[in-house]
Length: 171
Image (cartoon, rainbow, N blue to C red; front, side, top):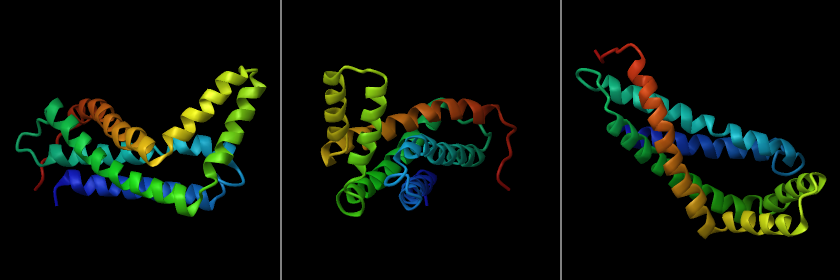
């Protein structure tokens, strides 16, 4: 199995598992304020998988010279595969598993904005943008495009990091 496929599948499954655990722990239902922070921490899953991917790619090379372009390209491919899995899961999650989660998340966000004295027009615009981002069409942009680009950006930094680590060729 190609490393990009392997780590893309692992990354996508890992993010879906993370979201499921957030749901089971009540971070999308009874404690949505905590879910805001754990959602940000979910980026650790693709970050870890990309690091492992780039290490594997480097180890498979004869001289261990992983080019920046190859690293970014591998990361974007793996991230695109992960994004397809996460997209499918999130559409299902938002429609069947927990269709009210967006309302609960917005309640917390709106309360924070009102406490910060954000103008009501800005709050309403924020609600509309958030709701649109979690429609199936909006998720194409936020998840598929966003995760792929984020994977490329993460891969840039991680490729530079992996290139600095001691090289261990496969035996």
